[in-house]
Image (cartoon, rainbow, N blue to C red):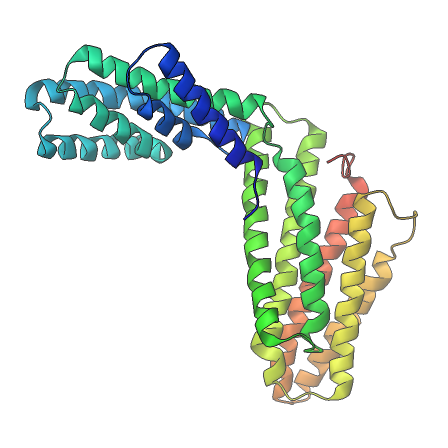
Length: 340
């Protein structure tokens, strides 16, 4: 398990919340610590949104809990009913992320049997924890989803390259290949989450400039291209080895995949400004990709049964090449493609 910035900041937020609660002499600071743990978010925008949402739902939950506590005291049945009501309200307000901490506030306030001074104290401790997490998140190692996105794209491409280059040749042990394939799927899912965070930060916190919006388009295409590469691996696993093949067909598929992976590698170098101008001949590669697909489809038209499976694999390879070509064209017009 890697020790990340979010783990470190969660610990700092809990520490800050505890010290603040102790300094203000508000009794047991446990609620503040719990609130800080819940409130630590992966991006600046989500931290701000969580703070605003919690202010609303916690206030509402505390008021309902205090009123219910005055009527029903701390009866377990009453606490359960109020929790259900609060959950329904949070979902209705589309603030489902706040439910956990709001329920903690409800239970803590109702435990005080409606005594407003205890209720206010416990409510304030929840706010101390939320604000502590927000301050730590924006002041200490603030989240940089764009940097994390680009770095993870590079690492994921390396894994994709290894799997695609050994998929047809079947050189890697099956258990290792499966492990790497699952890891690749998880990496792509993680990158997708990073992209959503980056998109939220750019669109919600400030009005995006044209260059920033353009950059998001490029990053989205990076993600799409990795997904298409993964689909090639899936198609090979599902169809390629079940088809009747010759050594020439194996060589044709292997060579085409190698060309596309090299093309992908060159595009990644282009993003880092490490490639000489004119080093990528995308038109020639696209023509080669067209010829590759036509060749396989031609065999299918001639009536060979196994060619149907091969045509599925070749179509996935063709689509991967098409997405690479689009990524290359977008990269050529991106003003900030290597500043991350």
